[in-house]
Length: 371
Ligand SMILES: [Zn+2]
Ligand SMILES: [Zn+2]
Ligand SMILES: [Zn+2]
Image 1 (cartoon, rainbow, N blue to C red):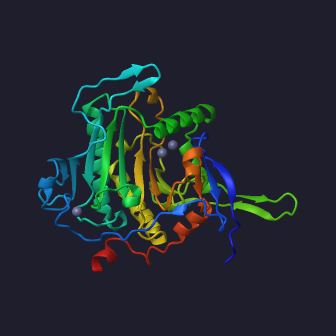
Image 2: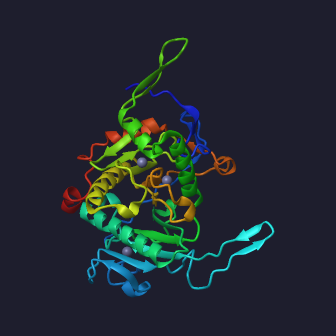
Image 3: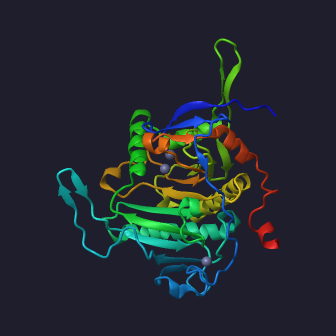
């Protein structure tokens, strides 16, 4: 096998050009401390866990369960320690340069699965369809419940390094009175791109990942400097969804999943979309698990906000799921400069993920059940 040349370059995020990452892959460079891997709690049931079967009384009453019976698969409850709440009247304050917006909102927990220690790649496709459709329904209900909510964020923390405080697999949903800064930046920059190019930048990135091929030669020696080939960034492809390793990834193993057909809002996904999304997500997570054993990660949905200034962005914005495995601890350099350091080249990471033989690393259905 040929040694991949080391990379040291600053890459501009194509969607948010004001953001960039430093890709520095030299072996002797250790700019960051690796996150300690932790053994995963694989127990199916834990007597003291508030999210396990039989302990329903340990959580606030269910807002919804799927299906609506005692043997639930998915259960939505209010968060006991909400970061935003709707228990008081809104009051915004302006004092000179100090401005506050009242912390009004909703914060709920989605218990992803009745099995305590199950990982996403071990869940069945049917279950993942049910989970993402629970996300969709609750998101829609929250938007309809109060027009003060500008953004409903669905996210998942898995593993202590990703901030999960309860080990039982769960997601969270937060209705916020403001649009998160990173979503705002994506919406604004993709709108600018659309105005200039009459094309959605996310669709352009997908097209490029699927069709682009180029070789860059060194001007003096004529040696090949870089080869950009078809599918270099593609990790997984379904009929309706694609998983891509972003060229300017902030995290070593970051992967984004996007619908192949343009749509700004996750709220419009159909059951057929969800069936394909489930497959692409499960396979992507199985690849991540095979490469970084015991993956700890955050994933979150980015969809068009419900704020007045997001109107008219239907054609320019494109919803997606960002998966950010946490394998290293951010350094003072990263916090101080805002420049993320990525120690594995995204091209190499994509190749590694793509090369995983999923038959050797089987996920659910077949192997997990027979084990
Ligand atoms: Zn549990
Ligand atoms: Zn698009
Ligand atoms: Zn995003």
